[in-house]
Length: 127
View 1 (cartoon, rainbow, N blue to C red):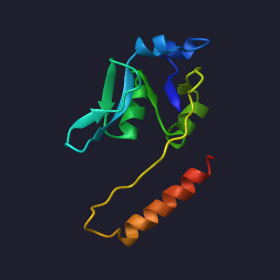
View 2 (cartoon, rainbow, N blue to C red):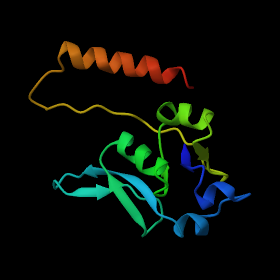
View 3 (cartoon, rainbow, N blue to C red):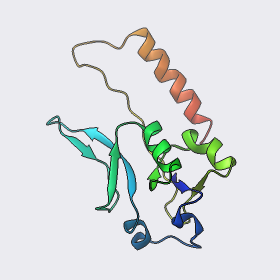
View 4 (cartoon, rainbow, N blue to C red):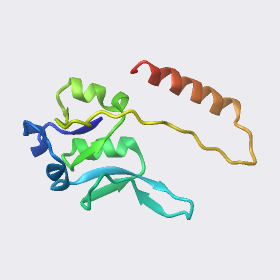
């Protein structure tokens, strides 16, 4: 979900445009590419803060640092409490794939397999 803090200026707009998004800081996920470079996953913005964990992104949004795409399961409680607001833009909710990574020369262990099953079960509740 595309969210911002309830105190953020974007939360008060009747409709959010791409121009509105570009005027405010996007807090986004950073990932490591094939060349071991940290790369921000930005959405049409030159004004961003890239962090490596969704929990850190949520916390930065809740400190009124900007807007972000966050998994619904991570922000549902804060939205229900009125602390975070979904942005009023057509594509504010998107389905994203989740992946797990492991070394090519190692098999997934029982813990990894169990965590993947648990995560898949948890996320399918929100379909």
